[in-house]
Image 1 (cartoon, rainbow, N blue to C red):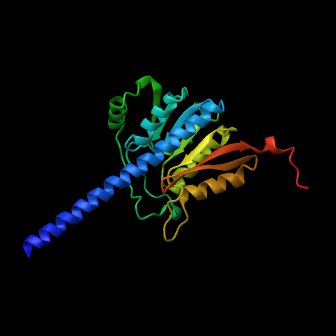
Image 2: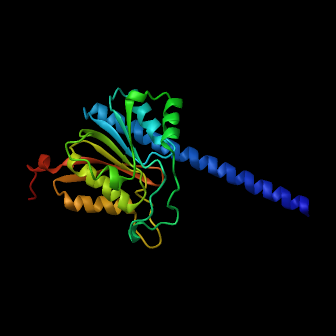
Image 3: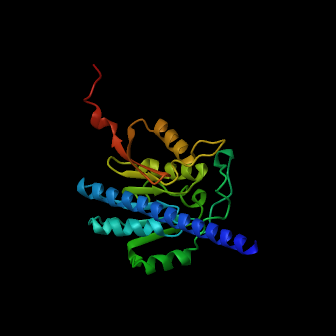
Length: 238
């Protein structure tokens, strides 16, 4: 009987590892597909500017952004905005989610630099901005760098963090840029998706911009490109 229990436990463990491996591969492929298409579109359409990433745990998407930008000949400088200490505490009820716990998903600054070096990302190709967003982004004026952004990747999970990021991006919005939300389809039993809610509020605050759905990636993410509504002013309803 003990031998049978051991075999069952091993089988369950094997199946779990197999599932976890497939899940990781599928999520990486979804994100890589996004970056391939995004930088192809930006390059093809002549949209220059920097790459900004908000939430850099593990360095995966940062590496993909560097690889795909260079593959397509896009000269984006990369910016890594992260606390490098893990998630902050929930600031309000809208941050509630069963997975997002204070201190989780943390990659130290030294570890992040080591990941970039291991992926052959030159140190002069990127800038790190360590610290929680309510301390680092709120002190930046609209004229502060980065001003010209082609692709902003928003992976900060919490509603309050996303609101701070979008307030930083608001004066930097431009026609043709892409906004990608890694947790756009992450809701809970009591909340709608925090990133989706923050974008809906930004859309209401900025009627001059249209956030046009560009592509979904994986089960969790959604990208939009920003369209200047003035370019549609000649179209009038009949």
